[in-house]
Image 1 (cartoon, rainbow, N blue to C red):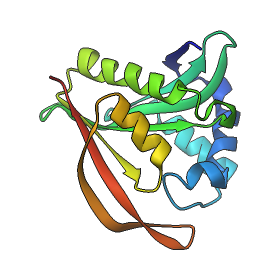
Image 2: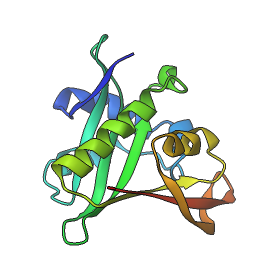
Image 3: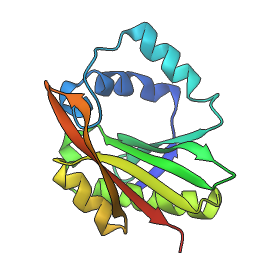
Length: 166
């Protein structure tokens, strides 16, 4: 399977709205709160104006199908660091390697195009699939935040991972 990163377009908005309202998807990153169409539209319009982030669609090239999003956030051009976030919204691609490939492409973009020195991320300790994927591309564990996030009626530990441009 070949994937690519591409710009988010207006045509992607309905799919992104569906994904943000899927409790199973949101449960990997945050507590679930239904998002209204108005809230989504405001968020969607704002992503094109923000200077401290880059957001991409993850596309199955063969099928020309949007399967997720990924981006670099909190871009700090002085310290040359950014936070990586990814969401595979199409559950048919979970475990397929598409997320790992997207992370590789995003890291390459961050290091080569944005001249970042460090890319970091947060992952729930019990999300083993994601942790293994991040380790596969070179991220190392840098720390743990104990009971840092309240999700699905329980506190979750958060693992901090980082990768240097070396």
